[in-house]
Length: 419
Image (cartoon, rainbow, N blue to C red):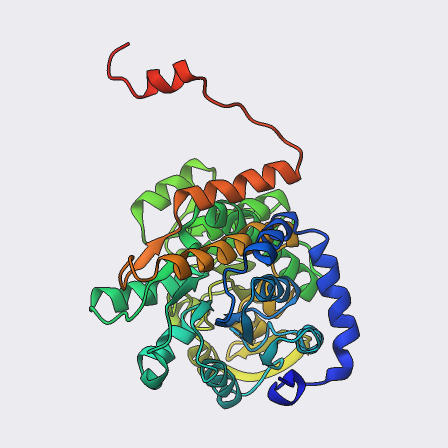
């Protein structure tokens, strides 16, 4: 197969720089390297086609190469128009992976890339946000029959999968990688926490210390964003709809209040909910002059851009990835990265060491689905604990950290109901 002629990428001359990026992350992903060694020997995907939709940058590219090393014919596309890196796409094509992706395609092109990825008739999929699954279950049901199952990366995607499952419409098993311990405890908390502020800081070049940061949503991603904001010297306000999470945020030392109150105080806003219209008209109307809005949820619907545009008398791009909205009273509000994922659309995403564990889970979960798809039903599944623990153990070994093991007496004690 000629992957260059079959692929859609911006510019193949960019491949050299893409290879350098992939080589760099490979050096910092020891867990995934170990999985690759296993896959090369065991060939779990021999003769199979795998379709991947993820944020298409270097760490994702290396995951695709690991799956390819397991014997798969891999096709990949981006899961967000602004997170695709064209040099990485070109490098993957040179490495024999079919790519349908460009940075910042228009909506029609983006949809076309997703459909072309599915038209390769994959046996297995890796999804991020549920776009591949949604297309398969709606307009392209003709491509369903060969799909054995797959794995989903994000909270948003899992919500969509569970809605399908609840209605009895899910046609194949999907593993909820986002819900694994080695995903949400590390990727969602430490990865999002660091990468969001990397994206905001390098885009704005403004100080965080002394400012007020409003974090909408106190799930694991929100916890990470709030923790890093506090570490940068900010005063942090959390908004929530869940009473339990609100109490947790309060006991972690943060102020908790409704968004309408927080909107009057915030200098920076970060939405991390997976829902829509988290910041909307009534909030824009009371914001400070100079308020900076950003989103770290999957889709660009958490900040209501339609209402923001309607309230503004003029807009302009004032700096790369920063749009200024001037209100009727002269206040200026700034939106980063078009309201898309600020850590990827305006940054490089999570650190490689963090994505090492997440993408190792993706790889082993895909192999698990391929082994068990006839037995596990058409449902949303948790990552088996033994796979989660294996990834954690590989990480400890890479860090040269040892831990204790239970003695036989301790095991017996824990299994007994008497002393």
